[in-house]
Amino acid sequence: MRVKALAALVVDIALPMGVYYGLRYAGLDEHVALVLSSLVPALSVAVSLARGRRPDRLALFMTAMILAGAAVSALVHDPRFLLAKDGWFMGVAALWFLSSTRWDRPLAFTFTRFLLERRVGPARESWDVLWERLPAFRRIWRVVTVMYGVGLLADAAVRVVMAYTLPMDVVPALGTAQYVVWLLLMQVAINVYLVPSGLYNRYSPLYAPLREPAAANG
Image 1 (cartoon, one colour):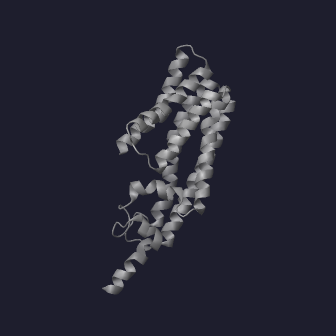
Image 2 (cartoon, rainbow, N blue to C red):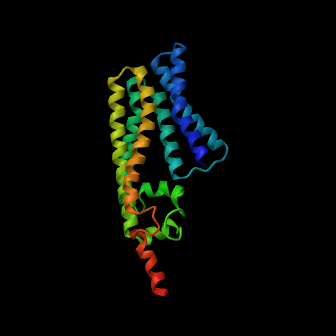
Image 3 (cartoon, rainbow, N blue to C red):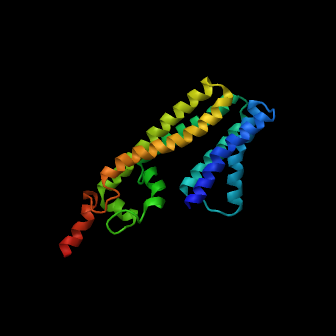
């Protein structure tokens, strides 16, 4: 699964940059190069859907963003706006994350459980059990969701500023590098919070309410 995720990341982020610079080298202007390179992730989505793959919630969101980006690229004729569109979409994603803190399950919980479920907790319980029985567990994922939302807002702001202030041919490369830097910084920041919270330590006080019934029965 991690190999597939890495391959998808290369297709959706690195390949469009390569297509853009290849087209620019071939002599196409900025707008045409941006439009054509923006269609690469949409083609990847179309191939996945044609193969009958059923996307999960995260995949559905990414699919919607990619297709919306392709539509904007085809309809808008302002190359600066096209450079900034990833920033605007990041802003939408940030608001989506922040609003989800009021939902029954925040987005960080929904998107992370397929990686960590059954790997944390004293008995590797279902995350539905942990969510229902541990108020601190619920608080952890609401805080992480806010962290992602704030991080996405910061990323969006930087992308929009770069798009309107830097030379156009510089922005795609910087934008791609920013994805990598942002992911690394977010992982560091979130784990700086998660490790002391006790999420990864099955003996931490976080899971004490799960151990109390067993101790009482013993």
